Length: 527
Image 1 (spheres, rainbow, N blue to C red):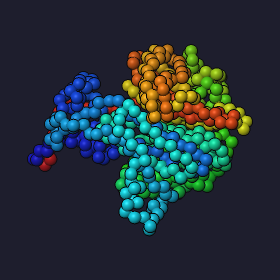
Image 2: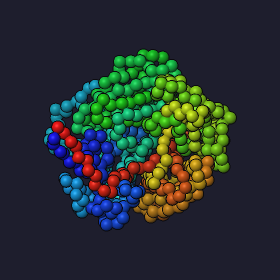
Image 3: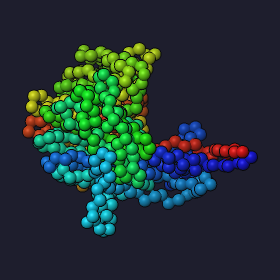
Image 4: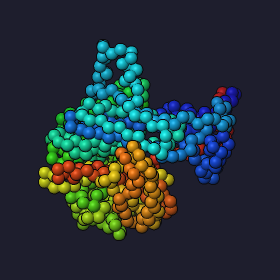
């Protein structure tokens, strides 16, 4: 019998190589970080900062009147140390903090990137240079572009720049197709993503953008589900995304079935990983990014409905084999109530359902709660909100997907001195949340304020602003005490009577990971 011993660090490294997700390093000694300070510990497990992570920003717009701002930010933190090959803890110099955003090629589905015969080696080297680089945690950096030629971006962060790294992409299109304010926190790559709230109707032009950060091509399947079930089409299978490239796919071209207003998009990969987001544009109601919903769950939270929302539409999908009956509630300024417009929603298995909640906030910002109508029957669902502000010809739309709590820390970059609103919702207990405004991309002094949020309520505030702010800045929210808190940040920029806006939920940045503090015997016995 042969005996093979694998260290925990080796197993972690192997898993990181397989999944492609953020990697970590172990401490020089149990319970300590790289600088010798105690590491956060729970029982026999220790939390340490991740060392490497990635983000993907889709091409912002194809409009010639588009203006896009990127804000890249990492909260301050402490990097870990690494282990030797045999798993023994060693103190090393932390990796130099660095977060880069590189341009990605844009291609059409199932076609390789065209070769430029005139391209020289020097031109190729130039194309590989980052467009934006962050080297100092706690200080955001910014980039502005205009026109419709901006490419998708592939982001990589290492060292102390990795834990909690976030990049906000905000685009304003002043007129024409795609008019509106589009914003998103650039997502991390994944393998299984749900987008309820998309559409194949004639009034909408919805593109799902697939971005591949790696050196090998990825094959993705894009499944569409409407009110009657799956929209069948051979075109939804086997969409090839070349290495370090982005592919935009118009949803209405994937199916010949009748156009529908409410569609759920399911993106999966056969191998590898992708960043994905849906750019939705309505002929009369503006445009915005629809980002992925939280994973299917029996209960969901959709935070940050604006106080002056004139229309709110809930779209949900039940991906399993069982119908879902959902109870609808709104956590408002003083309490949690059941809206008069709709108290519940029935979602058939494998289908997408929607309900208009009208102006349910009635002048107070709120957070929508979805729970099982029957407590013992927790059928997993995904959900998102289509939120409208304004009326008539002056409407603007944004999307709010179901999201998770802020946990220990969550960050939203790209805030400005005017037009920023932060909503905080506590569900199970009173909570205190510390909100820190970073310095600006071009100057300013950080500011901090702590808020108390009562159980079952939503607090909407104008967040703190850095003194002497120049440029854009980041907001970091940290749970000080109490139960879980859900948060969202709204950016608003009215133009010619149109209330342009966009909403980004804040979720735990997963800047740290939990590992055992003691080396484990992972002996493998083979014949």
